[in-house]
Amino acid sequence: MGSRTALVEDLMERFPHVPREAVFKEDLLRGGVAFDPSALSDNEGGEVKPKSYFIFSFDHGTLPELGEAALRRPPEEIILTGGPYDLRRTVVSVRVNPTSPYRVASDEDGVLGLYLDGKRIADVGVPPMPEYYKHKLANGKSVMEVAPTIQWGYLIYLTVFRVCQYFGAKEECQYCDINHNWRQHKAAGRPYTGVKDVEEVLEALEIIDRYDTAKVSTAYTLTGGAITKTVAGRDEADFYGHYAKAIEERFPGRWIGKVVAQALPKDDVQRFKDYGVQIYHPNYEVWDEYLFKLHCPGKERYVGRAEWHKRILDSAEIFGARNVIPNFVAGVEMAEPFGFKTVDEAIASTTEGLRFFMSQGITPRFTTWCPEPTTPLGKANPQGAPLEYHIRLLEAYRATMEDFGLKSPPGYGQPGPGRAVFSVSSFMDSLPAEPAEEPTPL
Image (cartoon, rainbow, N blue to C red):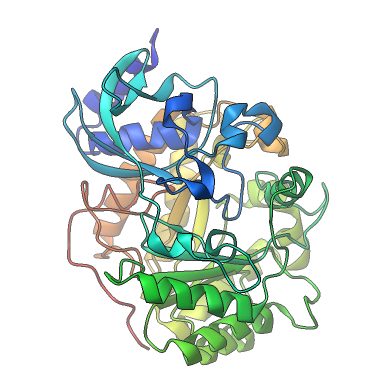
């Protein structure tokens, strides 16, 4: 193709039913973006909401490799609009890559833009510092550390356990840098609480609720590493569930409550429901049986792929099929040395998984793989998966939903280009516009 611009324009021409905004968004998510110093934030003392590193690094370099972007954080997300492609409002999670052909910089008038191959292709908006980030907890901790918000303020992301008990090469998921991200932030002297105290979480939520007068924050996600034993004397369902119980008792009905956890036995899933969780994300990561065993050795060892899928289906009896939304990591299907060699093969496999779940009324969602360099798959695949894979996945995803008569999953805001706020993949940008939907009680 010669240039990234030529590649992107070729894909937009070949796949006209995929929104052009999603083509750029997927490319930025898979390959990252560089930041001119003029486009960096002034951390928590500035007017721009900085990147919170809410669970993974989502960067193409370690903190010491990011230069000034490690000292003055980039924005949490950016919004793309206008430019020669007339882009509709598109929210993109920031993944820093100093060598990316995409660059965010100010022009001579101080106006931020996105540049590709040296040409300005879009105007860039950055999230303003929310009022609730300007207020600290009584113990001096920041709201951003305890309860950061993403998706342009829609989602409060509560990573209450910042490491994973799947540990080491024989257990860690091969694309996941949660444990390294913990280590690098501690090494840099940044605050990065390992296990968040429930009272601190409630205090941070009180600050958000007090100052988020427009009620932009609509949902919270409870998440963290897998628990194979206990944390603070609690098993996984009780550990994550007791935060939900406390939140729902203090703030009944204020937010849609979601939990990302392992695919747990039915009795444990019932505890999530009893604690007040409304949406359950038992992530299946990658569909192919061989790749699941290789890429998710801890999950295979402790649970196993077949049992994992059975538990996902069983959980629909408790939450209702529409409120069970497992995630997969889009792109690891093609990771060398063991992944599929062609886009056709990878799309066929992933679509098989989509059809398996969607035929049961369960709508998966996905995160676009960022090949973090401290992970085995990131080291071996610094360029990630081909952009064509990601574009064809969007096409296959929408087609499969239509085949089974499904709508966009609840708890993600409005779908459609120019409307979506989900920032770590383009699946919501690629679906037809429709009214936002609340979770459906069973």
